[in-house]
Image 1 (tube, helix red, strand yellow):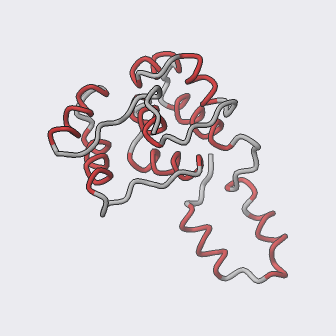
Image 2 (cartoon, one colour):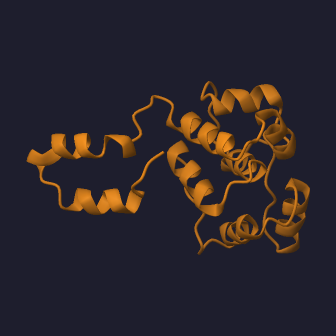
Length: 153
């Protein structure tokens, strides 16, 4: 597991000269994503750390098993941020872990100035129950619910 935060690495990069690139890569190798499947590695490491079972996560996220396994192995890709949010919530990710998962997947992080994202941030920090409870809370606060993997826009 990485020991330096992204912010720490960015600070080092701000002071790194072109001639020191190789040195930076060598000194920070354990903190860099060197896998060809970084999202898969990240998700699986957090799931393992929390002693969760992938199949149970897919059930809680209301995502079909086959699709969920293909997403976590990066065999399939989704353009729906809600699917990743469902997976993270069902896998009991913290807000920080969720933000990192979104970032690694190449999706926008939750942003406090966007009303729906702000409500989702509150949800990840307070964990009001399952996905049905999450959607009820979102609806109660006048924002769109977390769409399921079958809903396309």
